[in-house]
Image 1 (spheres, rainbow, N blue to C red):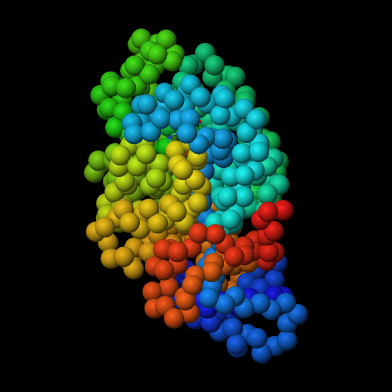
Image 2 (tube, rainbow, N blue to C red):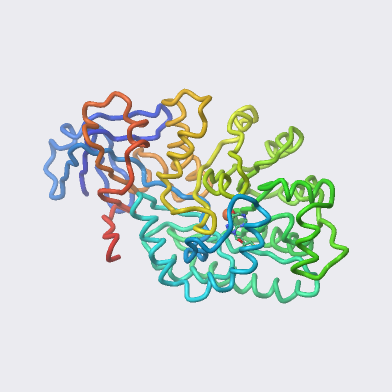
Length: 412
Ligand code: MCF
Ligand code: FE
């Protein structure tokens, strides 16, 4: 058993309790007791540590990352979705080549900002081993993507092979999921095949949906950027969308899913999505860079859709620091009371995604996994707005515990 304490323990429990001079008693399996550090200290423990001027939070969760794109710094074009996608198609191969070192660096960057669990979108399986051997808890989403029907059999075989490989690694810290890339990049047979697999193995599904106005134009009016896209890259003059918005959404009616982006929903789309078993994942910096827009958080509240915040990959972000992402959201949504918004944002990177990823973490309570992040925040012991100030100032963890073990981030 170990006991750690800090100036403030942010529990993310039902009441959003913040325990001043709080402590957590835990072992490698779970949290045994939470309370005042001085009370818990009355018994004699071998391993006791109090972190002065620090906060303890549940370890953070980044629900949507493309680790395989970690080599990108300045190779892709921003400011317009079509320009970005063109640049991805042209540079994808070179960005993915020999990407292991960049993936390892990205993993360290992820752990360093206090993230203990991730949802990783894997296009080719290049990140499988590295993620599996890392201390992170991983939901590994095998991506399926493909438009030309001629290649369906090959794509299904390759996808199935990756899926089976990742399923073999299933453990309390590693689970598989399925990512249907998007309605514009996946024909109906491939999508149905992937959904069938998800149902068969009871896997969480992730998809990019209505990220751009180009995608909306294509699905609704069958024209615009994607018409040219299919001509340019696939030599297809007669390409048509594979779905209406409604027929794409129908694919998800019997599964549990994460819908990523959702920047261009109308009222009907909101209503349909809110009836599915879905959470929306928003990646504010990615959305700003590719689509000049932030997710409509007010509307999501109207429809009682819980929001999750994630970074996306380095393919559409300047880094993978989930706290930098949280700060962008904190400043972007000026219509909300700043202290209430800070709580919402913290939930969106802890408790809410934890409910979907199911690693028994995301909030601090007896019986939950011993997954904590500790951050030094100058003068936090005298602060009356702990959550807001945590989000304003936390950048790098002081210590990170996953399953009760302190992670040596540099040398794991
Ligand atoms: O979420 C962002 C923007 N939207 C779509 N795809 C990606 C994002 N970051 C990386 N991607 C990947 C995606 O997984 O880019 C490729 C896919 O492999 C696009 S190729 C149509
Ligand atoms: Fe993405």
